[in-house]
Image 1 (cartoon, rainbow, N blue to C red):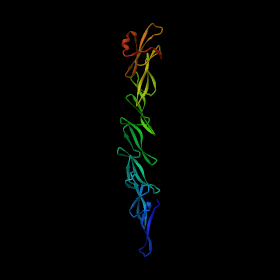
Image 2 (cartoon, one colour):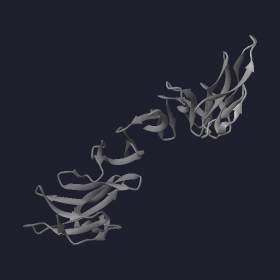
Image 3 (spheres, rainbow, N blue to C red):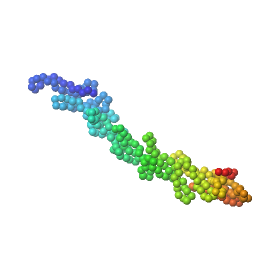
Image 4 (cartoon, rainbow, N blue to C red):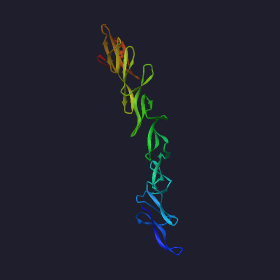
Amino acid sequence: MKRKCWNLLALGPDGYLQFRFIACIGEGNRHYRVGETWVDAQNTYYYQCEQDGPYLKSRPKGCITHDKRNKIAIGQRDDFGDYTYECRQNFNGSIQMCSVGCIHNGKHYKVGEQWPDGEFVFYCKNNGGRCRKVCIGCQHRNKRLYDGDRYSEKGSVYQCEIRPDSFGHKPVACLSRELDGSTIERVIGCRWYLQTPQSKIEQTCELNGTTTSVKTVGCIYRHNGFDTIFLSPGRYTIWNLPHVKKSVGLACKETAYGAKLDVFDVTQLNVYTQGLTYDMPRGK
């Protein structure tokens, strides 16, 4: 806006005619007396008419808040939505509302400060002169985790994943139990074997919605060091040993940690096959 003053030609104290400034001219060519204020055409900041020696000047004095309800002086702050704004005057004389902090659940945070919220950690970031609340990490059992950090919960392994447009606790692996009782982290889709001299239990890690689980694919009977017969969990079969007039019973039974292969004499068929389904012997 072009700044103007309204003047009046009057007789001065020395008896000569002189101009006397009596008002500032604001938006819409309206006149404002000393001390009066007015807003710009966009209703974003306001001016005040001030005496400057024998002259009058229109000086920028402050900003209009984002809700357009109040005036705040240069240097003052106002909360709006999730952010704190300060009315600032730039080096070129213009004034504007600049975001200087974040608000979360009624608490104020300066640029650079962090805070936890549920399962995540947030950060008040200055991005190109504007503040933003940015997720920078995860929270699990009061421990802060950052992008790539992992933790386990009820057999599932989760990874804190932070991306420019998303964030979350991503299920990435299972905790599998070995025969000696130890646990190993296995990624989703991985297949492995729990092996004894006589059997191998094939397992895999599967994704089930927001969790993972170890699934037993089947049991493998090993004869003379070779993988010979495959059985799905809950199945049993009878196999004739090669070159020997003898049969063995094989049963793949589910357990708390997967399955086990029972190898038994066929005379004990009723003991080992309760609740199981018969399957034809098939190779692996």
